[in-house]
Image (cartoon, rainbow, N blue to C red):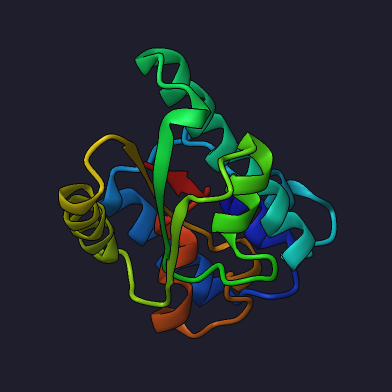
Length: 171
């Protein structure tokens, strides 16, 4: 990541030095995954790349969860999706409903713009819904996306997330 930043026209030497220190102090090593968009010759953190990364991480996480638990898609009656920044049309919750062909009567919430800690709120919402809807499963997808929101420039307060969040995480 630092080599790509050095080769770009977006960051000063001072910014590169700050990034090196931030990454070093965070415990992130050289083997930490970096999204492909950041490895391209020309950095283009666009919505198309962000959607591609969201689909890979979110769908991959759900596929793994369903395989491990044996829960069938038709048994899921509640979907709560939390993403702090990624807010597109169609919403992430609709992308999940369509991908997994969840039932028409699914209770679906798309919680956005509330920061990383909204994952706890999403779980609380699912828990409250399960008190009312007893014979169903709830799927809570808590994730974040920084691809289209990476900061290109020397404002330290804005590009610290570039150093700490390298790929969309889904939980």
